[in-house]
Length: 195
Image (cartoon, rainbow, N blue to C red):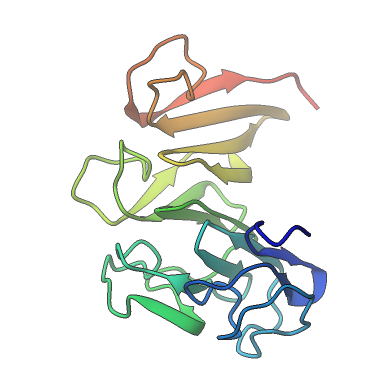
């Protein structure tokens, strides 16, 4: 890993990279692998990382690192502004699917919903501005994947054996894949081939 690369996570909760806001969960700069860097986070099944914060999901969703804009707590609170130890996300019971961007995060238990929390930039949470937490529901479908971009979100949902990508949020560069450049808090489907 180059010294100017951000932190990364791997199996066994190894943490690599630089430490500016507590994102490694160790409280110290780390440029070498460190196993079980955060002993509070045990039994989790997935890890994710934003620019200056990290998270883990499974039995519960945890965050650590930068929280100056209140994007990681789940409640919209910027207290604490950062944390070098794991803290539970308020209102999220855990998820088998987790993705973290710079100012928002999303998780799913693999059912028919995606929970998003954080700063509301260009409808990235899937709702109108002013909210800090939102549940996006896909009736009669199963969520099989979630990805968060800077100001937009994508989910892969499966209905009747067919996967579709649903996108919402910023769209000035066509991020939603709907042949438009208008942001949307309503999910926009992009069809994929069947399994």
